Image (cartoon, rainbow, N blue to C red; front, top):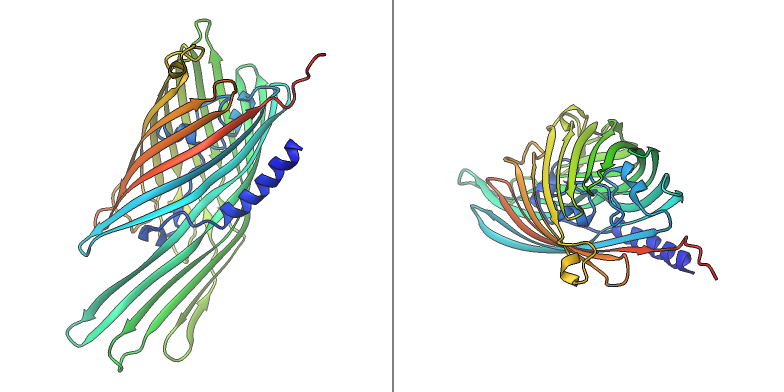
Length: 400
């Protein structure tokens, strides 16, 4: 019955996540929109690290080699939701927006003791959501309104497998099924009757499969300290897509065409060190080669570097006092924008807390992130993400 209920919940939430619009940013107009985050919420409080992280308390799709860190008798289930408040500021003034959405859903379980583990889930690859109008004029004679609107997104369902090749080395791979639809619309509408309006409508439908591989080296010292180093890699992918653009004027369609679109090759490295199961320091670097992909007729994107640094502290993982077992997290992330139209780096700082249940392995995590990006159009946001990482001993054989 547990398995049936979890499977039913997994399918329902997966369908719901695929229908969500997770942004209201005008910057989502460019490229594929705002890109998603594969990092579990427990690591988002540490700035979004994950390539060099292994834990039996978190499902980490960012690093497929980490799945074998799970207990050999434990089924894990992770569900996260978020709410975000954003302020946009430019020469026209300030505007406020709020969004609330499901973030991701994932599960993980061992297949063979502590040597083989599997994970699956659904999460967003990108999100598009904007609607704005600008009024201007050509000289003093012609006045117009420029309208820009877009919606949709690309979601991905993943399945991953991890192997412990040795007691200190693990490898893993994820396969992602990408699906979704993105619509973009822009129009130029003139006030004067002698001028003719122009509109452009673009629609992208995606139905593709991509892969990611990862590896981790790890060691626990006699004094309880632990070290992990990891790497991930994804090949460049040409999407199986259906992209069309239609441009119309006052008479008829004057342009219609399709495009060959790609997502980039990317690689990343990360490491973490834990002292006495209390203090963890972690660092990640990821490079996404967006400048080498074909997208929307020509190369309009640039390579993206992501730097993440995080710290986690708990006073005593086995303490009798509940506060001693609470995890406290802080982190920062610096990201290069992949859209040419976005100037300056995106800076994000985060605070997080992990609240374990008193008599179970389940952990509730809450993360608050503050982010800033843009120069001419400044975007500042505050995001709260909450998740429950549920652990159940489904495979434990009780003795009579």
